Every structure is written in C-alpha cells, then in structure tokens.
Amino acid sequence: MTATTSRPAPDAPQAGIGALAERYDPSAIDLPGGPARIRLASTGGRAWDAVVTTRRLRLETAREGATPEALLAADAATWRRIASDTRAGMDAFRKGRLQIRHSLHLGVGFLAATSGNTDPGRLTFESVRTKTAGRLSILSAGTGDPIVCVHGLGGTKASFLPTVSALADTHRVIALDLPGFGESDKPIGAPYDAAWFSRSIFGLMDELGLDRAPLVGNSMGGRVALEAGLLEPGRVDGLVLLSPALAWLRDRRWAPFVRALRPELGLLQLAPRSIVENVVRRLVGVQGGWADAGVDEFLRAYLTPRGRAAFYAAARNIYLDEPHGDNGFWKRLEAMEPRSLFVWGRNDRLVPIAFMRHVQEALPAARHLELDCGHVPQLEAPRETHAAIREFLR
Image 1 (cartoon, one colour):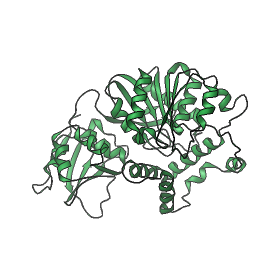
Image 2 (tube, rainbow, N blue to C red; image 1 turned 120 degrees about the vertical axis):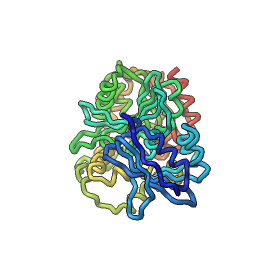
Image 3 (cartoon, one colour; image 1 turned 90 degrees about the horizontal axis):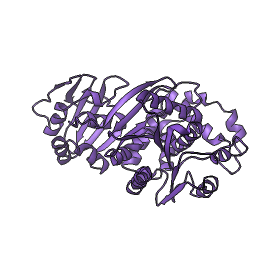
Image 4 (cartoon, rainbow, N blue to C red; image 1 turned 30 degrees about the horizontal axis):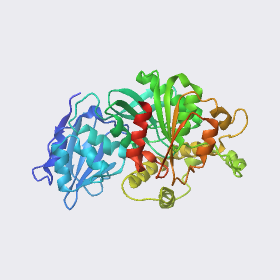
C-alpha cells in the first residue's frame, strides 16, 4: 500500500520532522486502536503532532488539549540526524538522546515507519490472529533463523528491543506481547498460566510458519518458555532464561488467601493511579531511560480493566505455581529436554540468584551466566547478555 503524506507548514521548527513525514511507510507500523496522534517535540522549540493512519501521515502544530498516544522528544541536532540517517532514530533512542514516552508500541513503530528502510529484515510491527489466544501483537526484524522473545509480568515486547537490535544481523528476532499484555487481546476468564501462555506461543509460531525456534524469556516469560520446553520439546530449539520466574521453594503462607481471590476483581480500579505508579517505581528501583518507558508500558495496560484482570491472574498463577510432588515444577524440570542457558542477576531482588543452585541440581547440563545486574539482563547488561545468547545459539 502506498502512503500519502501532508507536508508540514513552512514555519515548521525542524526540517527533519518534515523529512520523516515524507518517508512514512504504513506497512511497518501497527495501529490496533485506529488512527493515532504521535507528538514530536524539539527541545526548546515547538512541538508537532503526526496523526497517522493505515494510509497516511498528517503533520499539524501540537494543539493544547489534544492528548497524544506517544511522545518523542529530542534536541534539534538529534532530529536533524534522524532525518538524514535511516538508522539514527533507533540509535538515538538506545543511547538516550531521543526520549519516547507513553506508548512504546506507537513511538518505536513510528520510527520504524519513517526510517526509509525498505530492506526485507527491517523493523516492523504487526498483529497476528491466532486460533489459541486471539490477536497477538509482535515486532520483528532480521531474516535469519527465528528467535522468539517472551516478556515478563507487566512487561511488553518492547523490553526486547535491545535484543532485536543486537541479534537481527544473523536471526529473525520476533518479540510478542503475551495475551493480556501490551497490544494483544485480553480475554476475560482466560487461564493466564504458563501452560496457556506457552500454547499461545505455539499458536503464533503456527501462524508465522515456524515449526521450531529457540525461546528467550525474561522473568514470567522465562517460566513460560520453560513450560513450552516441557510441553512440546520438539518445537523448542533451545531455551535462554533471563532471570526466570521459578516456583517458590519456601513456604507460601498467603497461598490459601491468594487461591480464594478472583482475578476478575482486577476489573475494578481500587487504587488511584498515583499510588500504583509509586509502587511500581519502587519495585523497579531506578529512574530515567528504559525504566520510565517500562513504567509507562505497565501502566498503559494495568489502568484498563482487562489489563488489570490479566495481570492479577498471571501474578496469582506465578505465586501458586506448585513446587513439589510428581507434578510439581521442580520434579518436572528434571525431565527438560531442550538445551538451556540461564542468565542470573547478582542484584536481582525478584528472582534471587540463590535459585541457581536448585536449577543446577535439577538440570546438571544447563549452562549458567552470572551478571552484575538486576532483574532484566537484556536491558541492564545488554552487551554481556546478547554475547552469551549469540554464543549459545551458535
């Protein structure tokens, strides 16, 4: 489909912004909510809104009271570089010179759609209709052997943007929003447990024509990847587990109470946004850059009724994951067939590195890597993490 654009007014503060509009390719961006308003702000200058549809991009002066779904902000020099170099937008974002707030799906999708890159392996966003979990939102880049990346609880596919960038030169890297999160469908009453999530991944692979692929999972996504390897080992060509959520071995004294709670209570917003945001920021522990963007991504879904219900259901299942017995997680783990690499953060406050010893006992052949980072190695220690993934897949 050929896009049409509206040129900015002659007094546009940044010629670079106009150049982006000329390069708009609607096939690279996914607009699940229909037309979107994306604000482009120049530090110390005026702001412009790119109103994008599946056919065209229209630039207009940012109007007070017009709320954008995404905000991109940079200084004048960065906007000029983005306009002159098709790869400069993502590079500026990774290096912190370009700030993206609110929806990373739309913000980064806008960069992909205005990059001017027409290579087969360029970064693209799309929605894929599956038989198992409805519509799933993905981003992908690269043309080599496939890799599927699975985010953690409250996260989205955007948490794997550094992985996509690092590995797309040799692989086709696909990151998805699990059902219930990000831009994917959020069915009420779905199980939202590891088995259902893993079947959703296989459903996506079916639609993409992938018989098998390595899975890279962070936090809850790591637990989902492990379940996929247990359920259908023939379709999992290796597992990379980044601080994976694992069944608790210590006493879960709140288990009876948690079992009695219904996730559908999440349809009600019981806590004000300010309280939720403060709690999330304390858990993250850092501010700025990826941390701020990650909090935005979490709040976008959590502050919707279906997003809250999905979050509570998934969190409940993580807490209630049965560790013991013949059908318990740790006994089942001993039968894992796909080869695996576990990456642990020495400063991880959510999945302590002490879990490594238990994994070593259950899976003596698994590889392990310790890093000086927290709970999200692909964001906090990207160079070491992606070098280890590349070596493991090789």
